Amino acid sequence: MESLKKNEDFRLVYKSGKSCANRYLVMYVRKNDRENSRIGISVSKKVGNSVVRHRIKRLVKESYRLHETEFEGGSDIVVVARRSADGASYQMIEKALLSLMRAHKLVRKKRVSEDDQEGNDRSDQVLS
View 1 (cartoon, one colour):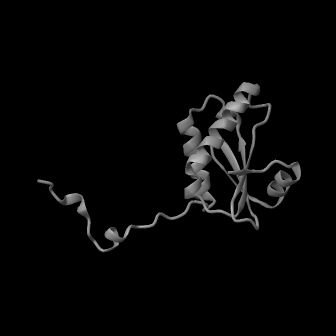
View 2 (cartoon, helix red, strand yellow; view 1 turned 90 degrees about the horizontal axis):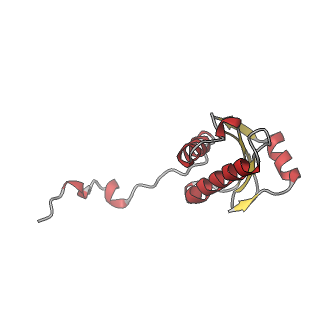
């Protein structure tokens, strides 16, 4: 997982990227010329003290890390936490992040296995 670190990279994504938002997070996405996506997480002092801000950053980073293989590459992503993210559980942040990734069409479509394509569903077979 690569991350955005430079202020100039964040500004570029804010300026020329597309944004979507939900109750807990705002996400800005801009295509880049790289193979992998880079993520930057921003949590304002308005959200809470440093402990609260760092917790939210960790939750977003971990949600992204666990689902990284499901996401399309080649984008710069900035996630901005809203005030309502303070006190949100991991599951709420994960759900919010995934919904924004879907809204930006960054989630890969799941491939159907060959058995499912051929109609060989083995779920109804009885084992003796």
